[in-house]
Each structure stands twice: as C-alpha cells, then as structure tokens.
Length: 71
Image 1 (cartoon, rainbow, N blue to C red):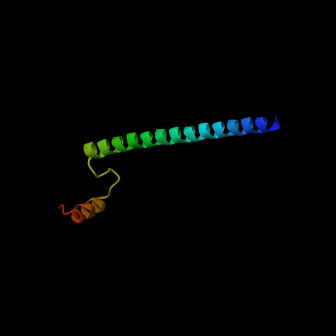
Image 2: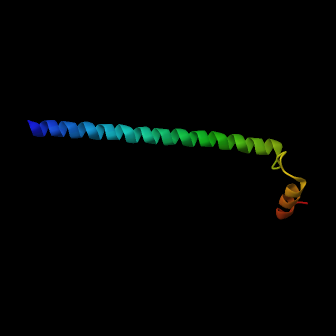
Image 3: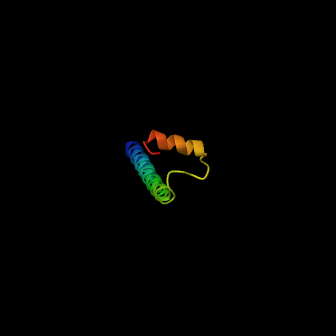
C-alpha cells in the first residue's frame, strides 16, 4: 500500500513538472511573438523615417553614407 502511495506521489510530481515545462514553453512563445511584433514595428518605423534618427549628428550620417557607398 505504501508503494502505491509513493507511486501516486511520483506521478503527481511528474505531472506538475510537465505542466511547469509546458508553461515555460508557452511563456517563451509569447516572448518570441512580442519580439516579432517589436521587430516588425521597428522595421516599419525605419522604412518610414529612414535610417537617420533625429539624434544623429551630421558627421554620423556622413560616415554612414560613405561606408555604404552613398554620398
């Protein structure tokens, strides 16, 4: 009888571990989805606004243009 109880406790522990692992997978998928959304937003912003930010100095823009073959 004690062996049965021990086995039931082990099964319960394994089930809880499986649920925890599943929750970690779901959390990771949610984080990846959030990162995909952020990346898409950033790409859209860069496409709309261009590569130059308002904080770029004229020297930074000039250096970047020369290094990419732009003038």
